[in-house]
Amino acid sequence: MNPLFSPIKLKGLTLSNRIVVPPMDQYSADNGRPGNWHAMHYGNLAVSGVGLLIVEATAVEPAGRISPQDLGLWDDAQETAHKGMVDTIRTYSSTPLGIQIGHAGRKGSTARPWEGGKPLPVDGAGWEICAPSALPYAPGHQTPTALTTADIARLTESFVAAAKRAVRAGYNLIELHAAHGYLMHEFLSPLSNARTDAYGGSLENRMRFPLEVLAAVLAAVPENYPVGVRVSGTDFVDEGWNVQECAVFAQALEKAGAAYIHVSGGGLAPEQRINLAPGYQVGLAAAVKAAVTSMPVIAVGLITEPELAASIVVTGQADMVAIGRAMMYDPRWPWHAAAALGQTIAAPSPYLRCKPHNVKDLFA
Image (cartoon, rainbow, N blue to C red; front, top):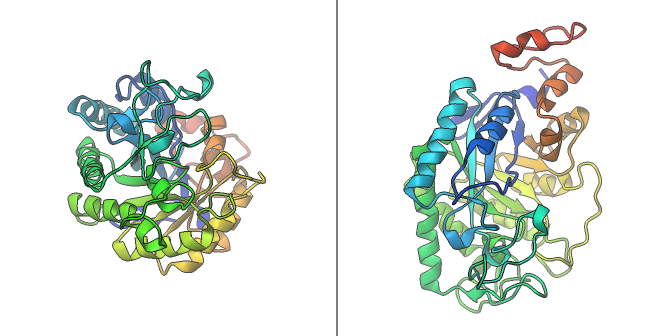
């Protein structure tokens, strides 16, 4: 068996293979509630044979949204809508479903990408934003309010409340969002965290808030329930968060009981310099993998070809691969990868007859 198609355990959850659909924001919610678009979108991805499907970034409070159309999980109506979507998908697919919960921090209150993505005014469709320090994301963006220690404690409880709702809604896994320049990442990076209290300055202090959230969420969910963390391995900016600090953070996450670490990159500052190429962030995952003992690592970043995805797992650079944009472009990517690598994969019964005649033993 090709290792890409071998099972892996994330605490009490067993995945049938190492292919993960990462969170990809749809900006299509109604008052934070998933609707018909989400049921169709995630239902389609859930019958792809993927090992794990993670629902997009979901805000733990209204001010934690990126856009007004972000998913949320801070009230009963949202929880009910999430449960309805999960139950619908469960009717046709046994694919494990995760959800990423997070807070946009200083990158909140913006228009949807296809509407320009610009900051929304507080006296219009926007809202006041917060961050570790009163440092705006970029010129022209709102200056966030610096969080007090009481605010930090309140936000930690908001993460806990959202996590409990996620469990009740039927999600199999929770991912905490500490990447792409959003609130937890803002605490981690010295470019966005200028605090002088216990949450700023040293690496130990900058890691404190995400680690407190992880500990609080783990204490609130059932035993052996997997809670992972998505990180940016680097800011791609000089003097910013880097892969060496990320490796130390990964060791702390492993010690704290995280089920996995999902290594992406960038997003914190518009000055970032990224050289895009196939697998351009895999080296970050490999560095983190080398630093931890046994915590599984997910690699992501322009992984589009089955051979590249398989090589990442075979060579031990990461334990799983996340296929993002390539999955939206080709929602049957896992089938095609299985065919290319001579593996078998699950498919829903109504689709079994679609197997090409020249591909033997594709569907399990």
